Length: 88
Image (cartoon, rainbow, N blue to C red; front, side, top):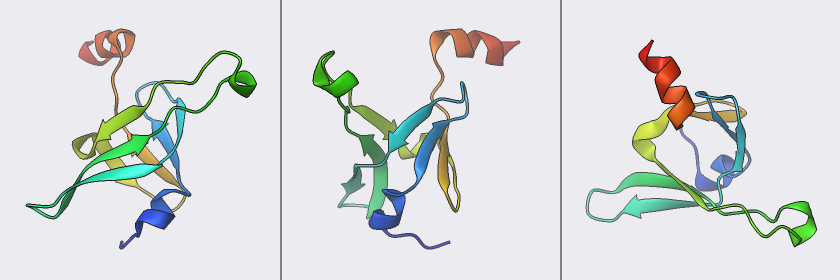
């Protein structure tokens, strides 16, 4: 499947490890030497109208992308608790 960056920006990014919707792709990091995508970048969005600051910017290495589907991008970003579950 061919996909342009604008189409990536319209897909929900879902962490399959915990089911969390991380948001939408805001930017990509491209290696100009190898002409490959290195990472997806999701900038921190304001929480509760900006009163509680912004969430952290998330940089997802492209090796963590499991599937780019029609409507979603599935990624695997294990957390401490999730890593323990995966080892069992």
